[in-house]
Image 1 (cartoon, helix red, strand yellow):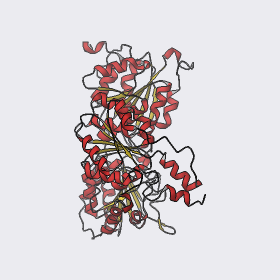
Image 2: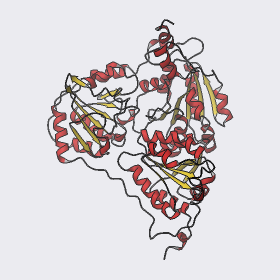
Image 3: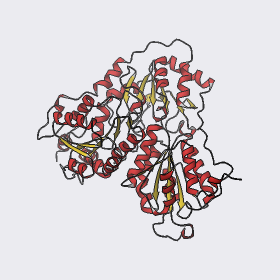
Image 4: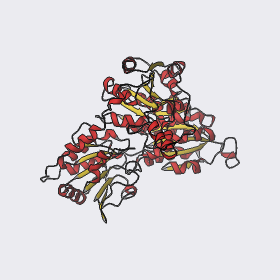
Length: 562
């Protein structure tokens, strides 16, 4: 006979038991009428935390950031059409960022499916392109096993989000407990084969200028990556917005393959005769628009090998002479154990070429009209913040200064969307502080992104989360303004009201607020924020002319002679 306490479980309660048994601890949501029993079961389970957010977009970003930081999936839940549509941006971010996420989408009742009922959308069709797997469950007694499958799918191979649409009448149904609730085994972590190990080791040893490009798949392989780089004296690049996979102050670090990557930083990659890709899908930005690794001479491509846990990623973007399906940490550790003498290689010049790009130019010191140069904001962060702070950063041109100026010395200190989604930083900081409350957590955003999801400051205040939000306020949608100025010589629809009193905005949401127009004011605001008991927003007024580390708006507009 089944155990008495579980004989009368609802389907929602079974789902939550499966989630908790898999180590999942948090669900982020805007509650909806189509999953009432799921929210209730989450709220009353002792091992789960249900977080009510101010917008489904914030909930999606929170679940993604939580999983990115901890390596354990989080849950995002939303109701039918409007809720599911709002949540989709965060789910797409999880897909492009290879982040495991479990998504529950409330759907119309079973009897109403297919009739274009109130707020009905074909959620399986909607979510299929932005998830690893999307499905609609039509029987309450299949919900627990579907949840277990979703967790396995989200965490196996290249991680990613999985969406389960559930008609609103299923979660509350009573279901008999099976002999045992469906379990979720640890995802497989295949080792590097002996022949592959020996061939890669010999190849790295023979090369004159070997480099490694490390991506998010190497996030858990920090010490092994350092050991492998030192063993073979190989330079290391971090892929787009994965700067924390390798300590930036290490002499073998060669730089970040991001937007607007300076030519001196790329030189070592362009000259490399052996490029080992570890845990990176080689995105458009990492490859500098699919240019690198490039041909070293006509008809003779650079030799590339790739290690990835997902066979679909190996050779998907660039031809490889050897592709290995293996867990990054296990593969790198195996390489370090291969015996043999490796020739000396001097990467000091290449490392210095990158380090030189992280230094603010002299003109960043003083700006006219009570405005900070974006470089000055990053310099203040370097002065005032602990080096192991978790930085969550938004999309926007301000981020180019952060990517250049901040040195990531510790693992799991960068939460940034490779999807380039605006509005990420504030919700991500909320989730990071919930997941690891002992950490210093700082969100960095532009005024455009901050006002897309800044209302989640109320969530932080309600939960008593001491996060710091730094807003680079320049009154522009800066990235698009730069592109327009460069391509067209004029701008359209990129001016936004400013300066706004964002400090008052923050106070209206229950947070602290401060405004900074000088480095001294910024230092004080950061110092106060780090000792505050709740969230703080710092409105850093920045110069809109300083549009990127390598250009000014006036220069771009003047270059067209219009």
